[in-house]
Image (cartoon, rainbow, N blue to C red; front, top):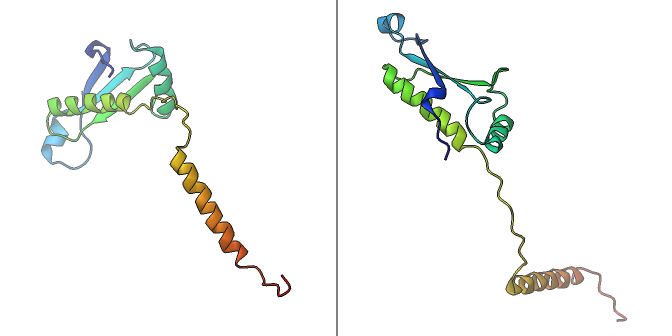
Length: 132
């Protein structure tokens, strides 16, 4: 798990979009979170994987921008934005090295038996010759 330092996060509060009555027009409850992945203090391997997986979400200067406006309070939207950033990091696929294995003896026997059954079935489909 990656620890994201709060000093690396840039939070700004903006007005929410969409319906919501008079409160939406007066109060800045939405949160815009900017996190610069290039300057972040995280391992290079993780940065590389992050760039590969989320290249469409990263701006030219290396910022990833998350806007949270689901809730009516700044604090809940701030927590939501941080959780969404952490979920992006937790969704990074780490390649697992495959350990080659051999098929078990019983599976080999079952395979051969099924092949024999199939060959008998196909032999029985042939035309019958009377002189044989």
